[in-house]
Length: 216
Image (tube, rainbow, N blue to C red):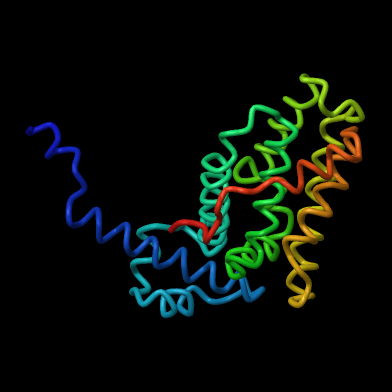
């Protein structure tokens, strides 16, 4: 009982976590607006915390913004792990992850813009979509499902470019049916990787697990 008590977060721990969370959310708001060159004072004011509190958690503005992007990537990765756990076919696992990521742009536009406005974080970070796409494509190659993939790095570059372009496109064309657009791009990727056209179309018509917003 005493051991459990010692490991439980204290009131100070919870207060620090709230302050750090407030700073990260403020940074995400600035990133979503495409604004990262803001004074630290402005960030702390947006987070409603004291200026001195900033340096209890971060050494610089750049470190905070990196943490803000990593937070979104970790949340996206957790959702993908949870919602793509069922299919046994690695080609379908890849397709589900790409389709769900594409739908995230409309379901959670602010967090989508955090990633899109952070350069290639969506496709180059060891968190989020990129490592899962690499894992799933490699598994599909080993299983003979992606026979046209001969260079994993190039395949990841193609997927990353498609993911980024698709996100920007959906924000720029709010009247476009996002599900249709995302599934069309996913089908094209499957066909490029060697999945027969009819099967690629079938995979992209299959129901997806429910996705609402990225959890906090």
